[in-house]
Amino acid sequence: MPMFSLLFVLVVMLGLGLRLWLRWRQVSYVRNHRDAVPAVFAEKISLSAHRRAADYTIDRTRFGGFENMGEAVIVLAWTLGGGLDALNRAWLALGLSPLLTGTGVLISAAVIMGLLDLPFTLWRTFVIETRHGFNHTTPGVFATDLIKQTLLALFIGTPLVLLILWLMQRMGGWWWLWVWAVWAAFTLGLAWAYPRFIAPLFNTFTPLDDGELRTRVGRLLDRAGFRSRGIFVMDGSRRSGHGNAYFTGFGRNKRIVFFDTLLNTLEPDEVEAVLAHELGHFRHRHVLKAMVLMTTLSLAGFALLAWLMTQPWFYADLGVHSPSTWSALLLFVIALPQFTYLLTPLFSWRSRRQEFEADAYARTQTGAAPLIQALTKLYRDNSSTLTPDPVHSAFYDSHPPASIRIQHLNAASR
Image (cartoon, rainbow, N blue to C red):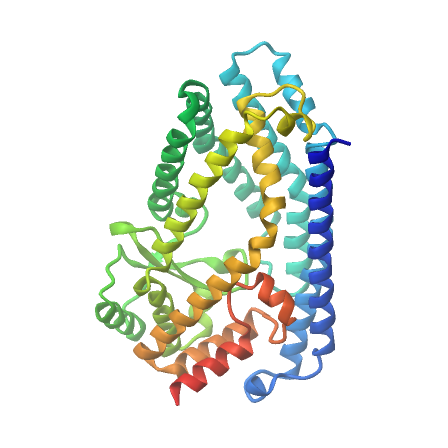
């Protein structure tokens, strides 16, 4: 076996082993702490609710292990198993132009990957989420969403793929700078368009009614100096029992969105505290920093791809015998996550640090008590485990563990 082929198999298998080990730790830790509510939540969350959250976490974590194994098999089948090479040869046999051939390979590969992932999505939605009382999605709604997502991806993705491949073929050795500029512009454009043109295709957004909550929210936004296109309530309960709130868009196209499930659970002062936390991300420019970081990393990624495209071993050692711009792009998309997986804890740590900063901002705006009450209800109603494994949490969790987060808020408010 060629050296890079051996390295790739080793990286995939070690990554799978690490993923499964982390999941085993999570399941064991959550199960061992299933029968005792952490002291900080003892008076607010019942033992039965704590057990439900543990069971939900264990089910999801176990199933995630099967997903990880399936993903590893699919990655190896696409590469060393000859899947991508077979797809490439099938399109080359049609005798189309390189541009149309490459677009066909990339689009059909994306469709096949989506189909391979579909059984996992169906099981997660209609078995695990239903078993624990969170799924409100009917088969009809699921099918409609899937059709919309596919058509939207084809409508947006096909022109983008055509343009990227054209630039890769026509712009010489510096094509990667042109492609990076297109990708950055596309990402910004999608972020701008999503709240007004894409999200409404899947959910209904209604303006927040006048009343105590709107008054509280308006005053908070004025204090924060935040301007948006509106405050909306989304019919999240149509698909799920989970509650959430988020900002979307950027520039003058920003929107604030509350799930209806969230408003049905929290009191006005608690909703205000949740919004203050989200505003903390805005005040600390977390979204902007994330966009700058991702844009910088994508530039480095395209530069790396430009070098790999010139290396015959990159194609041959990953199972492709007809080098091309589109096969290089697809191989890169498949292989890169296997090599960058170990960077996950760094991004998780960065995200948790930003969550603490957002909590601190919310505390200055609304006090700690409403945010603590809101978080406690959200942990309870979303069946979020209060006792994650510390190692698993440090590796994956974008938010601090519940007990640490509450203790941090309590300590800072004294």
